[in-house]
Image (tube, rainbow, N blue to C red; front, side, top):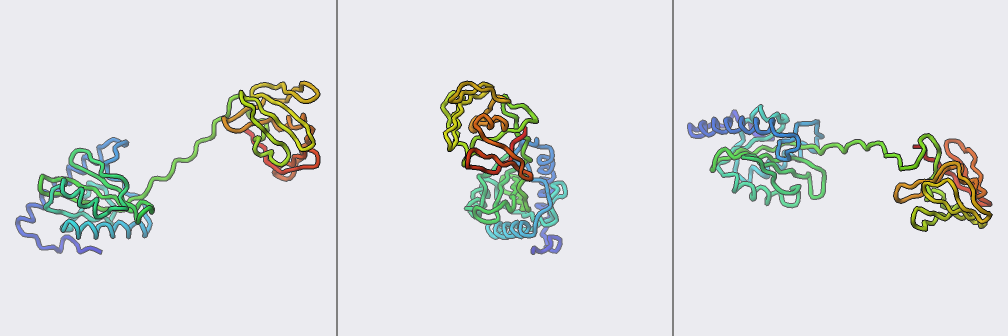
Length: 272
């Protein structure tokens, strides 16, 4: 992919520059490794990357190398980079490189440069609107010299979804149904103030209120086995309370069949 830096003949001036480079890189490594976890400018930790992601990083390195006319050098071990990382030394200041590199990667850069001290980082997608492919780390060695690092990056896995919180008023371990899941047998209408009107095709009507066991029917007040609840959007109704509407509930494998008059549906109750 890239020639080995050891094979590049360096003039005495280049040897001095390389020594300066490694010295600066060591300082950058210390900055990177000691930065707080919340800092967005620290070089991403190396992770197992796919072949596609590694190829994307290589392509970015080629583009940047051509744009900045950088010289490939050995990457400092203190940066903890992947074996395929590419480090470029250039006699151009970081202030000039940032807009140059960002312009070259226009359309694929994620946001803008994030800078802390003398180090700046930029995340790059494999393609426009594609997955994360590489990161570019830019270190200012002095006003006229810089180290540019390109390595594969991997987007962090989304955190595991936490266990949903139990809505207020719900009794754990008891079966409930969502009002929207009753479509086809029971029509649920919010009347505001935590009050809901439940009606069936045969004309049965039940008015229930969140947090109250007592409910109203055409023939009077009935007591529900559990008080209805809500998650802020849906009515959470006790499964056994459907009997107050004249509905029947029968097991059907891993689900239940709810029948109200001639209409029936299959559903799975919710147990918090």
